[in-house]
Image (cartoon, rainbow, N blue to C red; front, side, top):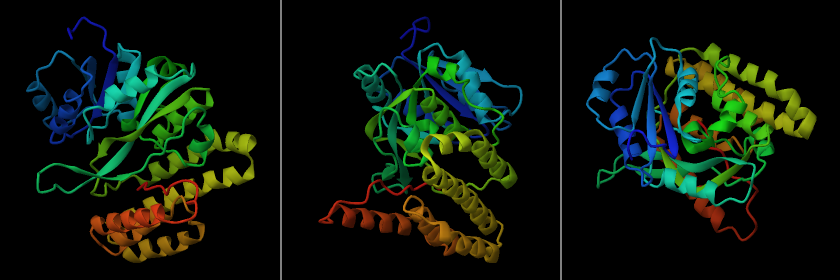
Length: 341
């Protein structure tokens, strides 16, 4: 591919002070079997050696946008969308990785679809495990589910909850819905997918793991208030619409998810600050709202955050549960537990 040619995909990679992780993430992009892409790296005001790291990588497919200060990942992604030359846009967080066939399989899925409203293709994602004896990252737990077409209902019930690194989206659809909402303090990806689905953009799925989430260590935001405000704003934007379209039962599911996110943030923040009594009180108080969708999230909090067990203990328990579920003689319960953290 020459620099003058039109790429098939514009890959948008926002980054802030992650110079130590960028080479791994960029390597996963350059390892793609579909090579006709541009990689738009948006340096969001990094104060580390990000620019020095990028200067060592020579490839005409790289487009660098160097923002004068830190605006946040939402602003950075919108800057990438504005600069994108391709009609298809893929997002990759600077601590995640793609498997080599990610772009090829997503593009093929979109091109092979007869659905004229198809605008989004999402893949499955896995959480990485510690390095194996072969020194390769070992994908672990699948979290996505293959809902296709009009998925607005499943986004509202949180049966489908893709992350930005999982999706390939038509740029024209992103422009029509206004991209990411920079006024949301948090949950901007959830809001974007709701906007896309609500405006009749259909979703397609590649039902296999293509994204590796390298987030085994808990990353606690110091601005818990901003996280909570984001949840409140999200409900103001979508709560009334969800209730009008699907009724009280679905709206209660939506609220249960919102409360669950807030509880998990509070529990993790309290534990991170060494306030274990507060963490336990919040955890116990939240058990009354535990549903099938957030049960395993609660188990993870109990084992890893409160009881300080290695995360592998939780993963082994979940995998044991999944094996037992597959061998049950009756039909399994509809849906799969979310492993959101």
